[in-house]
Image 1: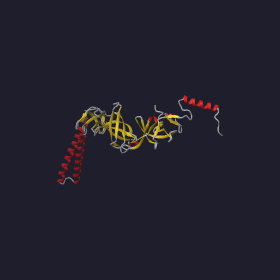
Image 2: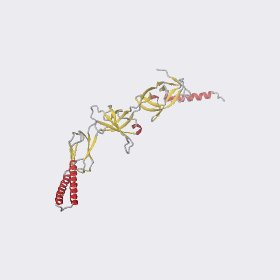
Image 3: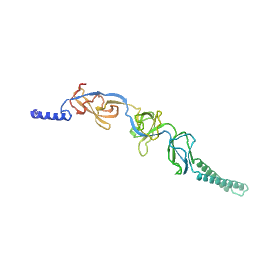
Image 4: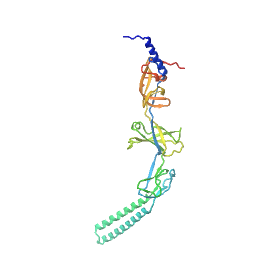
Length: 346
């Protein structure tokens, strides 16, 4: 049964329309004036973004082979050093005493061996006694060699020219064997070490171009390039360490700076670019856009997947197949299937 539009009904519809207009919304069944923009296509890829710490590419943690009391640390942080330069030493009293003891033990063992040989020639000592004396002498010689070796490594010398990045011990401190005393940046330039999740790490390859920003240098972009991608995840974090070589362009970049990197993977995929104002209901990488039906009279709602933003445009990686234009002006007032008309350009 068809309902007639009574005067009272018409009044109610008019009131609803006025209320909608007062709220800035179109009246039910009202034709919305819209503007559209063309969908551009290009080959690209979403950038990989991460944050990391700047450090020397070749960092060497230098330590003493043996434990002891630090006698002197001869360099300060930031100092440039040359290969073979003395950097730190241990108090020598204990290691010198060990060397002297090893020398005495070796001398005694050599005398015992000489005596055993003479007695064996005179058939006074047995072959077993001679063999025991020989073994004792060899053990004493090995002990002396070890003591002298330890004394040599009771001092730290620079294995290569570079810069002292960190100084982790002071004179008078007791250090254990192998504990880092000095961290040396031995050249190779500066790299930003970034931890990336697996979904991003698999898209990055050595040689990919990158740009780096540091808060310490606002407004300055540093060119970079991926130097290394870890083959395995870092235990505990589950991320993959990526090293980005940074071109300092004549600036002195201090180790420890926090930088934000944007890597452009070499792999490419077809993307569709739309104005940002065309996006509605954005949530993470999901959003909604409106396009027009083939006759241009009604709006059609489309869910899309946003890959990344570039300036005033959004790169859409899914949902716009076959779509040539999207609604920009008036999109906020549309519903799926709403009647539309193209606004006249001012």
